[in-house]
Image 1: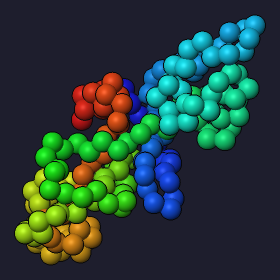
Image 2: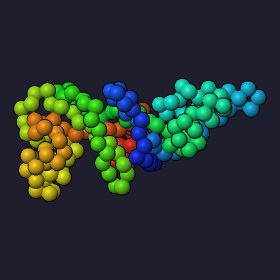
Image 3: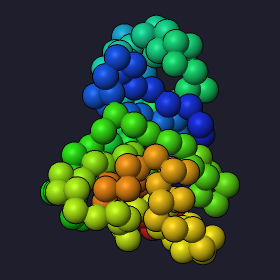
Image 4: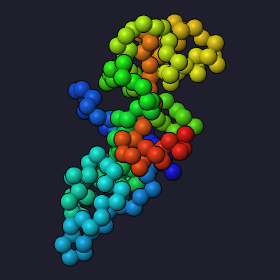
Length: 170
C-alpha cells in the first residue's frame, strides 16, 4: 500500500517534473560488502534521485540530502494524470494539495484549449461543487480554474507498477 506524505520536489523556476515522497513498501538498497557498490537499488530504483546512488557512501549522502528516512520515503514522479482524454488540454505548472482519505495528494490544473465551456464534469472539484450546491462561478472562484472548461486532474505515479498499485487503492 502506498502512503504519500506532504513533501514534494520539483524544478522551482518552471515545473518540469513533480515528485512526491511516498512510502512504497520496498527495502532500502543493498551493497556488496567488499566493493561497497550497489547490488540492488530496491526502493531507490523508484526515486527521482536514483542516479545519485552508486555505492554506500553516495547512498548515505543522498538520504541525508533528501530526507527519505533510509529509502522509506523515496521521491516518486507524479506527472501522470488520472484521466484518459486530455488531448484538448494543456498542463500548467500549477498544483494544489488535496486530501483524499486523509492522504495528501496533488491535482494539476489543465487549461482547456477550446475554452467553450464553464465547468468540466471531469474536474476533481466537480463532485464537491455538486454536493455543496455551488454554481460554476462560485466553484471557479474557489478553485481558480478560469471557468473556461479547464479542469483540475489528480496526479498519479509515473511508474507503471506504482500507478497500478495507486489506482487499486482508490
